[in-house]
Image 1 (cartoon, helix red, strand yellow):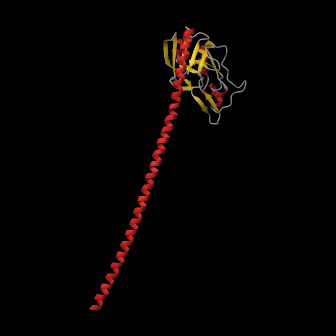
Image 2 (tube, rainbow, N blue to C red):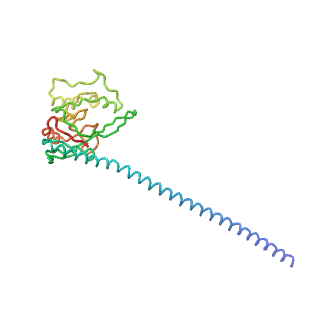
Length: 260
């Protein structure tokens, strides 16, 4: 009986030794994994701090970038006020102020506000699908009414078609509205007698600019249009029907128009 007991004890001793060795090795692995986790956690914290720093820097740059147009517009507004003060000293007639940032107009006389409302101004840089680029920004500064007109036509420039990736019509390819019709009849003919695809190829469009226009030179007009209160135009200043007529009646040729 002694031999089996000795053998059993030996086996148990070996098993215990193996178990202790295994436990020791597992402890080593656990310690190693714990160290790895701690190191990984430290790296994650460092990366997180770097990310937060980059986010803060990006937010600062974004805020600075967003503030630049506001600061520029504020500076332009102050300059316009100075120009207006100088203008009022020597000019007692009606004049117009256009705010392209707020998209508002202010009709004034002798420094007093006569009429105010929303307008639409240039939409800035525009690119078509072919990569052609235009700057449709309303030019700023002091301008004057060069000429005025009633029942104007909109003569589509080539960019009207190019912006839509179309080729401008050659002479004789555009669709003409009969000259024998009155201006009001031409508007009806354009809207009711032509299909939408045909209207695209009419170069001289009646009624698109409203009943009045004021020409500020350089292709910039005051005329009727939609999108008031926003930067939507190709550089012209769009007004509502009633506002356009009031300004047309008030401003003579050579009247100042301050745009900022």
